[in-house]
Image (tube, one colour):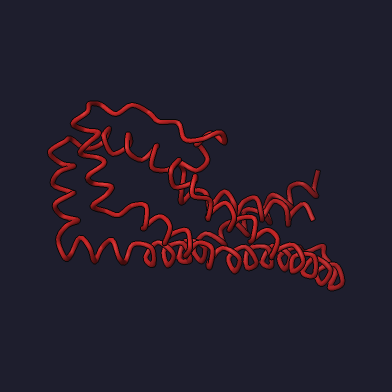
Length: 191
């Protein structure tokens, strides 16, 4: 069961890695970091509007809601199957517990993703981030790009590409995590 908890926690960490500002935002509300200047603030706001970031984030969260339960189940099932000391009966029991637990865990994650304050908190962190890494002139150029047909296409595809990238990441990372977990489990049993 510890391995199940570890795998589930690991999945949450991997999922939150896609949205690092989520882990940094205080629970009481978004912390608004000051931007460099009123001109930079205005340029960032224009860019985020041109990018329709609020809608894009909501769409990305919807895609994550769809993908995360299957990813979580696959990861935990792999962990259950990889346990060399587990009997068939204990594996079956672990899968049954997983099947009972997963809908609740998925719904809890979905509630977090659907919370409108989540996007507000992320935007409060993203604005200063853009202002730190782009000049006002670059922000204006990006805003112009996202007004073009190619820029709009890029924005429209971003949620789907993000979800597909997450699935690819899971496919590539999962075997490595399984090997790491097996090594950790093996080391813990030796001592």
